[in-house]
Length: 259
Image (cartoon, rainbow, N blue to C red):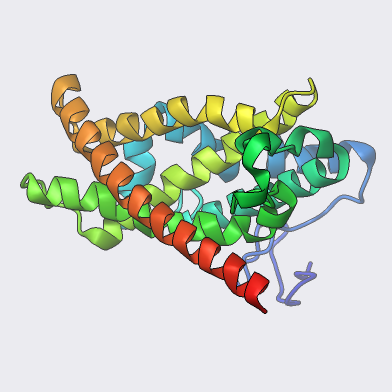
């Protein structure tokens, strides 16, 4: 018997090729075999994707700290997991802009009495969705800085900024996946996307506090105090970025009008 991938001679008892690592396939494809393979690759509780997703709820410190410390066989690599989340977010955007356009209306953000003077009157989800992946990517180092600076200033420096990036990459990937799935489910009931995302924001942000508590192994009150400081830093930096974005948007608008 030879490996069908690298053609190395194999023993009849071998289940995997010791040269290329490929699984030895002995049976022809049948509906039963195909179903078994789908279950093993995508649905089985032993599958890395499902295991990573579940354990980021049950024991996030195991997934994240083990990755930081070099154990990377049991769970999906942090960059792969984030890439999967971005892919799912892309599918979410496609479905919403194709089948749920009425749920993406942002008119309630604009005061109808002053639409002519409002720089945000042309704001639309369709115009923003093309930048969604970039926004998610930019926000990770932003939130990582917030958690790193708070814990650094309070003397907990066992994790450097890069390791805080890992913490926030796993956290961000998890909430992107949750947001994408629940947004589609809620939109099936005709709810507005922005209302749904607002409802999800608070519990998903609190999930960050839960992740930090499990990683740093502190009691509830110590974690709460640090988490509130992270929120304060986050809000301040977010307000600064929002102000800068608003100025750029206004300048761009008046430059367009002038031309």
